[in-house]
Image 1 (cartoon, rainbow, N blue to C red):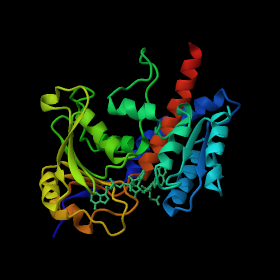
Image 2: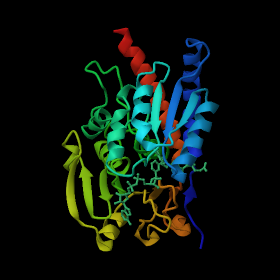
Image 3: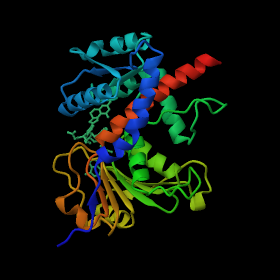
Length: 320
Ligand SMILES: NC(=O)C1=CN([C@@H]2O[C@H](COP(=O)(O)OP(=O)(O)OC[C@H]3O[C@@H](n4cnc5c(N)ncnc54)[C@H](O)[C@@H]3O)[C@@H](O)[C@H]2O)C=CC1
Ligand SMILES: Nc1nc(=O)c2c([nH]1)NC[C@@H]1CN(c3ccc(C(=O)N[C@@H](CCC(=O)O)C(=O)O)cc3)C=[N+]21
């Protein structure tokens, strides 16, 4: 059987940001003794995905002119102190911690230890609250842009590249009429992603192991931020019903043997997987129009873009 669909690689999407990032780093170097901004990564676990991700961040950031310092912490108990030291070190521009560290709620605490001025992943409570409340700036004068968490932001940028965002519509409504389903509702990716897409006008079905929810801005987008409705407990029937209605299917299930059922995909839907494992079967393109198998490269581009935005925000706040 011929497969009508096409694979789009994250590297293609990431490329569209490279020139802008490299140019900003060069300008930065001109006024900082030829040194690029410094990103510090903390690795305090043996998680292979985190280790690999750390290697990619290092390679990509250095190739674009940033300085990158990986600090491996053997004893997790010393991580908090090490973060605080980096917070107070003026030579450090950005900080990221590779998760999971403890693999429980203590990780959420550690996220908040990174000061928001250096939080390249956009995990600080202030940034999340702005995202959930559809607030795009940090200040009243709309000069300092809020930071968005990099994986949800990467998926938005991928959807823009795939022309799911309709730029004939006003900014902030460009997903009006689109239906998306997100299989993952973690606090790091799935829930903020569902909120972002709904804030941009989409109807979003948000799925986790327990239940399925619907995120929207109400009928005809009458609300100025999303609200959430419970559709019911998780069941294959409900999942199938929501999926067959969706123009976009986004998966992030961290499990080697999970496969999203191809028969739940609407003909011509767009499929995106952000999990480290392949969540779609090989026959996905019999149904999907566009298929993005991994998103990591765009996530890293967004990380570096966030880093430059933080540097700019620091400079702008000094000016006043
Ligand atoms: N590409 C990227 O930039 C990034 C990728 N990741 C990857 O994304 C994946 C997910 O990471 P986290 O969100 O941190 O994981 P997590 O374990 O915190 O969350 C997993 C979510 O999936 C849901 N889920 C699990 N099995 C399910 C099933 N059978 N049906 C429906 N829902 C199910 C859970 O209820 C939960 O909401 C991992 O593979 C991780 O490595 C994470 C961060 C960035
Ligand atoms: N604080 C924190 N932030 C993270 O974003 C984070 C983390 N901790 N811990 C580990 C997980 C894992 N993760 C992935 C990144 C890229 C791909 C990915 O698919 N990357 C390449 C794979 C291909 C290659 O080998 O080059 C790609 O998309 O092209 C997958 C998973 C981020 N994580």
